[in-house]
Image (cartoon, rainbow, N blue to C red; front, side, top):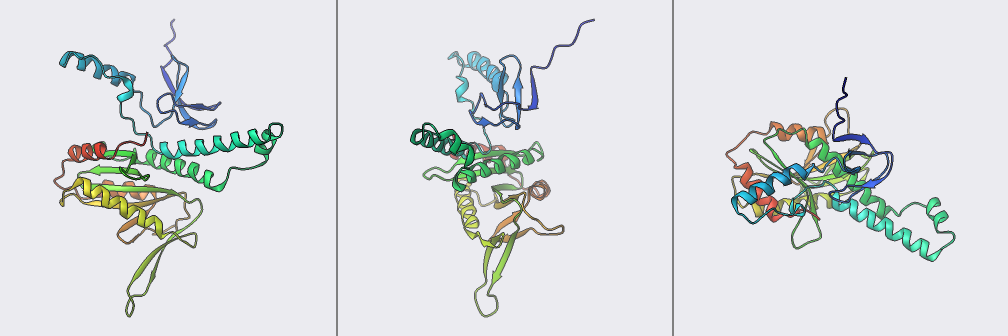
Length: 290
């Protein structure tokens, strides 16, 4: 009796910290990852195994052009939250190095008894939010196209997620405000101009709306087609949403939670849009955040 060979890879909760062999993102112990038995390496769940795909591409290139294979480094891999997690690791490592240099004997103890600054932890929360939403967006129909963590040329800004479907384009900003409630506040109206603002946990966060509006304008300018509707969404993860209702629109930007977002995108009425053409243009003009 012969036993069946073990699968080449396995999704598992990591016992030890490591880094993804494809995108170099740090994978802390306890997070899910893909363990590759043959090479004894790990990769994050967002990164596909590009080895087979790259080999097929190389073979085809040799046949059609005779120029040989493309290097694997040219494979364009979207990693949700990649730039935010790299910034978090950069800040965290920098702080550790500064403390250890200033206190050679007590540096380890100081680090053990103190937390990272809030500004550093915010980058980690942002990365986790983008990663969680990327997992949810996998529930969308297979004929839709999704981009993650795309750089806005000429600025330091990035777009967390872009979804292209036959109904249009969604520009999505993921926000992880754990236990806080997003709310719409309206002032003025009859005798004064109507003014809408976004409150999160009671604090004015209308600047988040301004950011998505700017992203929508940039994406619409690249699409350059009045027949393609470009929508903006603020998606709050792990927020304190009410049991009934709760979603709203502020200054033409929809505010909702992940499950409702995928439901709305999937149910949107289709139009005569060349999804692959729009997706290809966006992918080319908004490069991944490497």
